[in-house]
Length: 357
Image 1 (cartoon, rainbow, N blue to C red):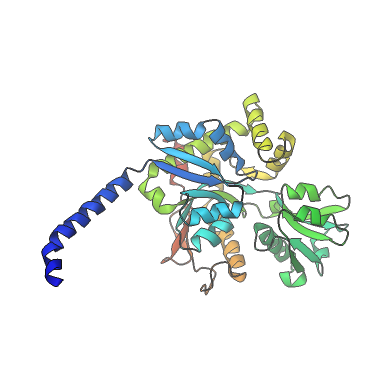
Image 2: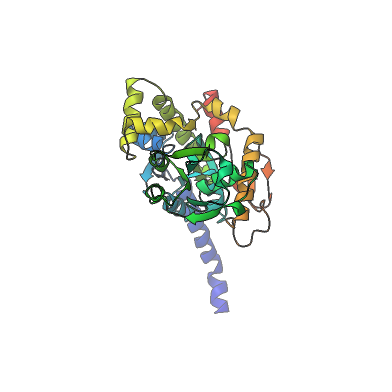
């Protein structure tokens, strides 16, 4: 056997090298990509982008194809991306940290489209201060961005989660649950928030406009894929800002676009516009660059990592909040420099701002 191995070693090695070269060549020639999105006010532009052919136009410009795929379950979409079924997916910055990045998948926030500016809120019945929440049962989807919003509300009020009792409730049930007379407090997001506020004694005592820029909606894309195929980053970035430029206006085309997004997210134009009013969407590439500075991103992710570490969302082996390295817009790393798995890379947005896409 040893003699046989030696006699065929060079041919086999050559064959293996040829196969590897062929695989590498095939990889280099990859031209098709897929991105997953799910229904939420800040993610609906991906639906319109697909419907209007904007993504196809920009993909064709760079000689590639980009398939935008709707996945009804938000978390399932992120999980599917994490295991490699998609090249990217829509998610919040917190979920980007705790799902793909914490699972070892290096992920870049290619598009940071908006931040929650009132879409997440703490609602009480018959009380008008966050201080009144002390000692109450609070219904919410635990370990979600609503949980994060509650934690920040309590922190800013000089309280903590020890001052309340959390009642885990699914996002599908929480608006209905809030109608029960024995339920006096909830933390929830739109459109469930709109439904809860229809209760006659409902009072919004805290919302995400008080923590601007902390709950970010992003299109997270595999960092290695972006590095290998920059044309993907260019096409997606160009398509995003063209889409935003259309929908954020009063023209007939803008109204038609928002009507389409509303109807395809279970509401209508008025309902979608109401949700959009509680969402700060960056209108231009330069506005995004000016707002999401390195210092702002560092401050935001400091809050997020402390919350996620405290609740065990960074993995059982995490010994500190900075176990995962986060690359900031200026290229510096916050956290573990030997374990960079989350990135805020603005190179493609800068190209859009400079008009070089």
